[in-house]
Length: 175
Image: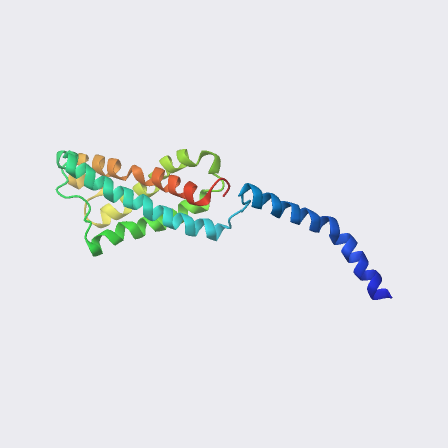
């Protein structure tokens, strides 16, 4: 007798909640909308892929600048290589920078494209202040001339905005 009474109480208590869940599921089915909130690790994984796409945009933009002749005018003799082992390094680094981008997407979601446009400054700062001096090009690559620094700035501009566009396309309306 006690078991039946408790069972009925549980059904009564769970009844309205169950009804709401069923109605929400029905609404999602009819509208085709999903109200998914991504975890930090999911956003990081998505933005790794978005960063790879952003880095691919930089590699392709390098090829375009070289084809137009702007690279040669700025003192760059060759575009980023599209050959098998050489192309993977910028794509991998773009993915790593994309993970960092993914950690900030939720807070910057309302202004994601502006954030993406400004986000390119982080990898550029690492390039100018760490990687170029380690390679012997000096801070900001100034040992190779100021036009080289300008080229690096111009060629890397698509990274942030393409990463933001790709992240928005994959994630959808809510992060």
